[in-house]
Each structure stands twice: as C-alpha cells, then as structure tokens.
Length: 46
Image 1 (cartoon, rainbow, N blue to C red):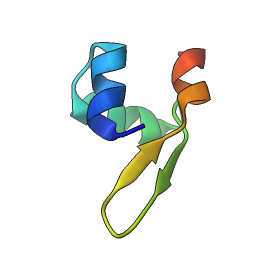
Image 2: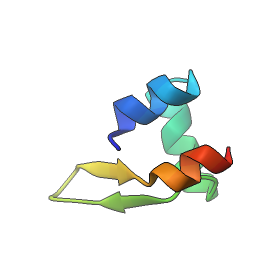
Image 3: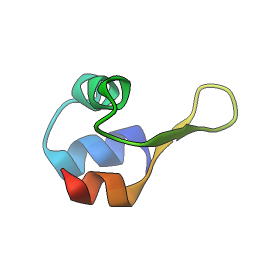
C-alpha cells in the first residue's frame, strides 16, 4: 500500500504515517529508490 493510501485509510497525514514507520508502529518496505510500500497487516493492527 502506498504512503498516501495508508494515510487515507488511517485518516492521518502522510507525515504521521512516516512517523509511525520511524517509531516501528508500521512496517514498510522501500522499493525502487524513494517509493515506500506499507504492509496492510501492520495497518490493520493499528
């Protein structure tokens, strides 16, 4: 799931999603250069 989609699903900003990733609350995989993909199961846990 993209950063924007995750932010929409959680009803927060993309900055907040990045903070969740940095804090370890969300699992994300960095794809080709700057693209981040967030794992859906980590969003469902929040």
